[in-house]
Length: 110
Length: 112
Image (cartoon, rainbow over the protein chains, first blue to last red):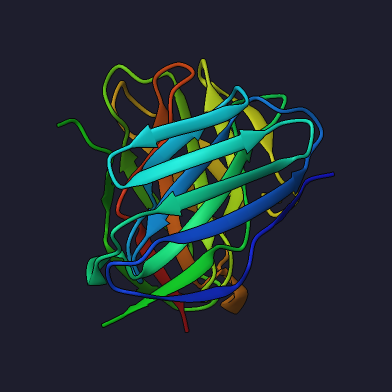
């Protein structure tokens, strides 16, 4: 089966750094994705990890440890517009389909 | 920048009616998907489509659902007899190869 866990909610302060964790147990692994979703909108792609290590992309970084079934998304220099849900998704064995976690709703406060 | 487009953005239908949700994937993409998201819940996989046939489907995708690619550009999801619990955002997505999935803006389906 597929099981992807991430915290439901987090709060952080503008200008700070926040780390959103994701753990997964899936049948097969073919990459882990992070998406951002504002309320009522579509998920938009942030990052992709398939090998262990850190991928950096501007203010956003994502880390993967396949042996631990663990990833995190790091957001630096938080801005108010970063308030959104962050979705961890795993691509398993077949069909390129993504299995999503429940999402972490991040609230950035002044 | 190429994008996935979906129509309509919002559909209200009576219980028991048929609805067709439409999607135009990115033109050179090969894999197409439908996902749904019930309000306040996680994004759930419905079905994947490759080479003009279903390649994978979830338990949600029962006999009431069907997908078609009637021409070279459109990709449709049909729900034959809608139920109240079908109310959700329906997202279409496409992938070109082994890259990320691009999502459309979604169709909000409300069954009354």
